[in-house]
Image (spheres, rainbow, N blue to C red):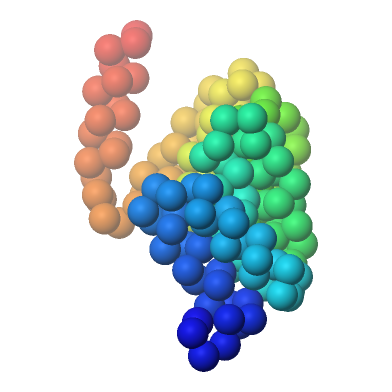
Length: 160
């Protein structure tokens, strides 16, 4: 960045590093600087949305930012998941459901999208469909293959 302080992508990556260090204010500032240089930097849009989501009072703006990110890269499922999560936190369930469904359509193995979709389905009272989505998410979560199902089955048996 010393050689080219107007490198939008380098600024956005610096913002991402600030996010990982839990420095939301700094991440927001660097992301805004990156977007001032170039509005077509998806990494900066992500950093700004994630920083907004971490700040009380600003978290409602994250839905707008993640909506812009989903529009900028519509073929990638993660922006739709992020948009769904921010809409879910705002209790805009039907909009969140649409975002999660889009993410699942793009990548049926996206675990976060399936868990988010299950959360929305639970708010709609569609427990059987939510359980199916949870099981699909557990199936695709290969890092803990089988662990999630055992925990969920133990929880479900305890509720009955």
